[in-house]
Image 1 (cartoon, rainbow, N blue to C red):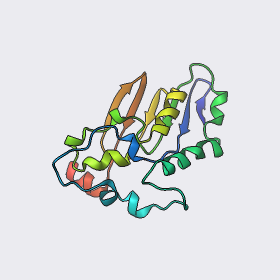
Image 2: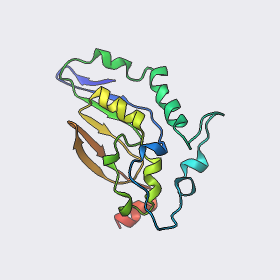
Image 3: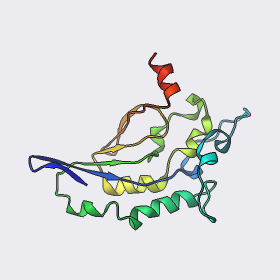
Length: 165
């Protein structure tokens, strides 16, 4: 959607996505008995998909990605004029560079339930000026391939209380 006036405009576009384990390309931490993503991430207990679609392979991520076309979410961008800024946003992470290394995470399995290569491809194709994302509860501000990636995480109330007493 185009927002603003003739004096200054910006396009804002959602990108639907879901996480999948194959997005995680970093080797698992060896030598420790660590819980897996299904045991630690609420998504696996609280979310349900139709038969034939699973969070344990790429099928859920692929199905949610297809909703971008079904709902024609990026179609209005065809009216975007050259030079008009574009901000895209998603809940999940489009790039593995946007998550801490596993050795720094309380739950190293977080990377297995945080991002999507389907989302990466959409961001790469749209070439936004800024992509806003969430999910991991880490504040983030980085530039990769001329796109600024921002996460201004608030976290859960308990996380906020522990960070900002």
